[in-house]
Structures are given as structure tokens and as C-alpha cells.
Image 1 (cartoon, rainbow over the protein chains, first blue to last red):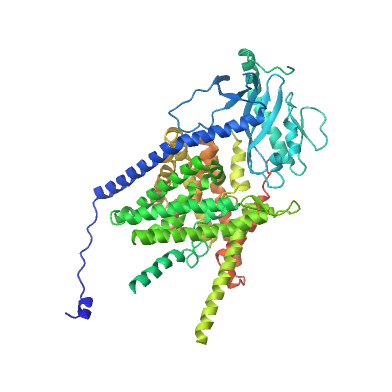
Image 2: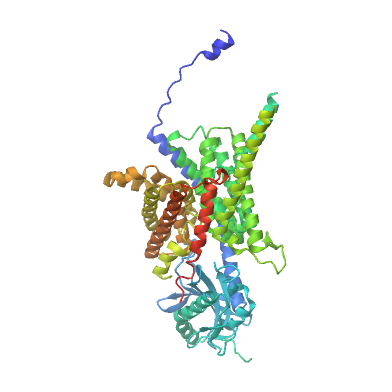
Length: 235
Length: 214
Length: 191
């Protein structure tokens, strides 16, 4: 046969047999199994690093709001009592609605204060922060914004403006923290709001007050009950 | 002769993803991540690289197993494969670059619904050799990353006055804040598409004119 | 946890899923030619989101705490199954609606808004009720964006638009202006 004739001859194609249900399920199962192996392997390799990163981030935040902090213990709220948190090793992820605070100690093992995380809706979205609370003097000794989606150039001054930060070095919490206009701070329980970012500033104040409502009594009781070795103010 | 043809074809497979068939500008695929993470250049680059990893790995596996995967369950299988690699990239970023992982957030996981990746498996990787599929994946990802940077770099420069977190202008620069906010994403991509369309149209017109002159 | 009304309004207006988070853009740019189809797609979205919210909560609470690496795959399987289920149920109980939605229903599976809802809800640590309210608000927000763009697109049909601008480029710029308008909702809840 010539080349042309060979090319024109059509070979009848046999119709492909339908794969059985078993074959389909088997293929999917195999894919799932291989996927599972890759995922478990990746997880086992990376999870220790992820956990370490998480711990490091928390530690950074705690050390920022509790000056001279050298170590801390994690406490969780259970039935209105503060208990030392035990690690539940079966759970690979932190349980989101667990209420936790951190007791910070300096290198002489004296209690400096408690680092309390909190969150509150701000101008754009939820503002998440952590405050340092000195139970002996009932003041806030530090505050750090952890997450914020506030407007760049305006609301984001809550973590970019150095003047706003000075509000939180020694802020009295009783009876409650009050926001005031810029330049009008008279009492030690007042926070000067940022001009042009009043709503974000007020959100921070609400965050602080809300956390105090939740934690203050429990923490004060905890300090007394455990006769904690509190850092003396005027040593 | 044949070698030259193969080389051209190889180059073509890679290059088509960059311009002629650029996934973002031509096919308007993979929009969601393209706009959400392009508020800084670093995030754009990170997202582009993550997508590259997922697309190349998936194409590699899919084209290697194309004769084994039954037709009826192919989409499901592709999705399982893609989701596996996306999870791997997610955990890898969380472990090695936690700052970037925090910035990109849930959008890393959303790579799995990026129509670009599933589209390439269905249209190309399931029908071509491993080598060509990987090249196609690399080309498409390069085009995608290029598009992300085209959106991300202007947004960061105009909206924050910086590039890759290095401040470009002095203190007197008043940033065009809307560029790093959501509307900026929409507008940036809209104007880029406009420019791309205009350029393509001119190229076509020139080609027609050249042909007429010859 | 956050106030329920805030969660709803935030997802609906202040942090609209489409106009602020860029989720659900494929249908947003592709399927907004007609007002009624856009609205129906939005409703289908809401329904699938509600089902997804419930399933995501169940998975998160009892399964994924022990195996977080299975999160993505399990969410996708759940979403795909929900869409199949909704399709079958709709075919049986409301065939008119099924015919009207046509091909849109399966497209919801790859819609990043649904998966985005599940992931965002997980990251925020929402419980059962909060997750449902969040899904309602998010779905409503997506529907709102779809309907708004469809309405505007219908209006622009009679206008003289230059060739290079036609299509997605124009819709993106319209979306940008809509997004700017929605920015005005920020601070809606503040004392």
C-alpha cells in the first residue's frame, strides 16, 4: 500500500469499557491515601516549628506589656477560678474560646503583673490587643495592639503613634477608663484619644474596660489567695 | 530540524503563560487572591510563589498519573491533589515564614479554588507529557506572578510610599491610601486590564497594517 | 465573643465579602449580566453558606482539633457535597428555581466565597450561632454586591463604551467605586 493509502485507512476504534464502580472508588481511595500520607508527613515535620512560632509570638507580646518580665505561666478561667493551664497534647490547635491570661515574673521570680489579651470591634474590624495589668496597684502598665485593620494613616495610629502609647504606662483602671479629647487629660484613669481617630481610640478604651470587667476581680482574688510574691513597688 | 521545532515548542509552552495567555490579564482567572494580597509587593510575590509551587506540583503529579486516573472521577482527584499541595504550602509558610503566613492569612488556603490551577490540569496536564506539563505550569505561574507584581508594586508604591518595605520617598510624601485599601485593588486591576486591552488592540492593528503593506 | 448584630452587619456592609475581601469574584464579574439571575445566584450562595457554616462548626469542634491538616480537604468535600445535595433537593422540591439557576449551582463549588466563609469563620473562632449569623451576613453581602453590579451593568448596556474598556475592565472599575462607597459603612457601630 502507498503512504497515502496507509494514512487514509481508518482503523476501527474499540470503545473504551466503562470502569467499574470498584475501580472508581479504588482510585479515589488511593488518591486519598497518598494525600493523607503527604499531609501527615508534612504536619509532623512542620507542627513543632509552628507551635514554637506561636509560643514565641505570645512571649514577645507578654514581654512587651510587662516590663522586666523574664518568665510567665499560663492561666485559664474555669468556673470563675484561675487555674494553671495544663497542656492537652491530643489537641493540635489552641482551642479558640478558652479564656487565658499570663502571669509574668521578673528574674527574681516576683510577680510583675498579668498579661491579658482582649478584642473589641473598632472602626473597620475587630482590634485585638494585650494589656499588662498590675494587680497590686490596680493599674495598666502596658498595652500592645496585636491585630488591627484600622484605616492606614488614621486608625492605625493606635499602634504607630508614640504619644498614644504613653497613655498606657501607668493607667488607673478604677472605677473605669475614660477616653478624653487630645490635650485634656487630667486624671490618671483617662486616655487621650488620637485626633482624627477617635473611634479607634475609643475602641481601645472599650477593650481595656471590657477585659477589666472580665478579669479584674478574679485576678485580685487569685493574688490574695495564692499569696503571690508580688514585686514591691518601692524597693 | 525536529530538534529546532521541539526547542521552539518548549520555549513557546513556557512563554505563552507570560503574555499571550496570561492567566490574570487574558483569561481573568485567579482573581480572588490577585486583588486581596496585592497591597504590598512582598505579599504579591509570596502569593505568586506559593501558587507556582502548587501549580507545578499538581501538574507534575496529574500528568504522571493521567493514564491511571479514571475519567469519571478526574475532577475530584485533581481537587484532592491540589488541596494536598495547598495544605503543604500553608503549613510550610506557617513554619518557616510566620510573618508572611500571618499577612496572607486564609488566602493561602484559597489557592485551592483558584480556577487557574484546576483549569490547567483539565486543559493541559491531563493530556500532555510530564515535561511539557511542568513547562506549561511554570509559564502560567510566571505569568500569574508577573501579573500579581504588576498590581502589587504600584499599589504599594502609591499607597504606602515604599517598595518591599523599603521607604522610597521622604516624610513629605502623602500616600494615596486608597491604593492599599480594597477599592485600590479593583481600580488597579481595572486600569491595568484597560492598558493591556489597549496594547493588544494596537498590536493587532499594527499586524494588520503590516500585512496590508506587504 | 463579638456581639451578634455586629457580626451580621460587619459581614453584610462594613467588611463585605465581595467588595472588601474580594471573595466570590468569578460570579461577580461573570454572572451579573441580568438582575434576576444575579439575585438568584446570591440566594443560592446564602443557602450553601448556611449549610457550610454548620458543617464547618461540627468539623472544627470534633475532628479538626486533632488533625488540622485535614481542614482544607474536608471543607472542600463538605462544600461540594452540600452543593450536590442542594441541587438534588431543589430539583425535587422546586424545579422552577432549579431550572432558573441552571449551571450556576455547580459553579458555587469553586466559589471562593463559600470556602472563604468557612476559613474566616474558623480563624475568628466563631461558635455555632455566631457562625450561622456570620454566614447569613456574608451571603447577604455577596448577594447585595451581585445585585448592585448587575443593576449597574443593565444600566450601562445602552451607553457608548469604548472597545478597550468593554467587559471586565469596566466592571472592575465600577466595582472599585462600589467598594469605595461601602467604605463609608465603617464605624457604623461605634458609640
